Image (cartoon, rainbow, N blue to C red; front, side):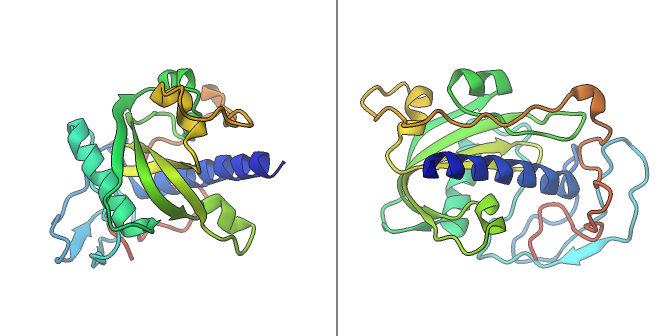
Length: 232
């Protein structure tokens, strides 16, 4: 029951991350300096070609935090670099040895399902390109969805997987496994344990009900002063 509850929280975190990414990022790459030591100035993106609303925002990225950059046309090696940088800055590790990359590839929703993994749920009309990166090491990560339920200790795990939204340059879903069992099918490694429970598949959204374009701010989310790619 505990494992099933943890998986449900992972699905909740996926939906939350999808909504937040909708507010942060557009299809077009953001303008402005990419130097982590300089101020980043950019207008809100406009995925449908209209004038962006709101004044420009100037934020100074914290070099200690992960600074997303679009990876739309980047080779898979750049996605791996982003995954390692995200892990270094946003995920606690208990080893000085860098994590090992055990899988890195571009994926579609259907391919993720065939690998026994749930695809992120996007509330936008457009679906961004994705990439999957799985690392092996010693990690301690607290999922965003777990924070909703109050004080939750970090999950100790030997494996962590990122599904990157390449338009955003961010992991839109993060999954962990203490022993790699949930990634047994994806890694085609039969030496890994069989998972006690199948991975929870996130519910799909009827495409005909989607009204927001990628990058448009969902009503009721006051994030119109956030600059894509910058951290506060």
